[in-house]
Image (cartoon, rainbow, N blue to C red; front, top):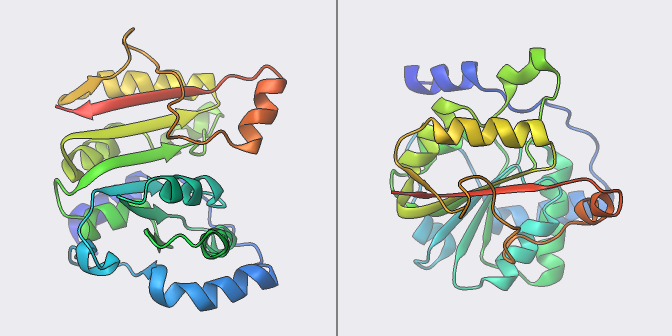
Length: 230
């Protein structure tokens, strides 16, 4: 691990490693699909055109959970290549199982820490879009230092996006939404796509999850932020 990566990984740890147990279906999908769709962390930038077997705009999602929305987005956007990063095995298995069921081929998966993937495996100015949907809010004040969206990680994402590339954030915790907006407003090289300088309506490109639908029925809010690399 080089000094730069060590600095990031020591400062930012956005998850707790709670592996859980894969279902039989998830384990079987992982065994079948990982050879084609799995990507391994390495010390040098990955040739994603080669990994996908074609050149196409790259969309990277950090922390895709069980992967249903990621698979839906990839299926709806066949002209782009989608990369998902998730540390939890059951989520990776579930995502690959869904991709297999939906016949989605424009998707590749890392099971690794997102900071190290961005730092080591993704070339600068190579991504068309980065998505971070519903990251762990670490809502207790003493845990705020664990939040993923903080200045040094935003700077790292900025370096990996192409000029004009989009960063799309979403959360269902208002305090975290305010935190995200404050962090983004404090960084250089971003244009807020909100007409009001704060949040945007949920774009059609981000599927409405069952969790979000349930939250809406209960009156819970969801905040989307979109920024363009200027």
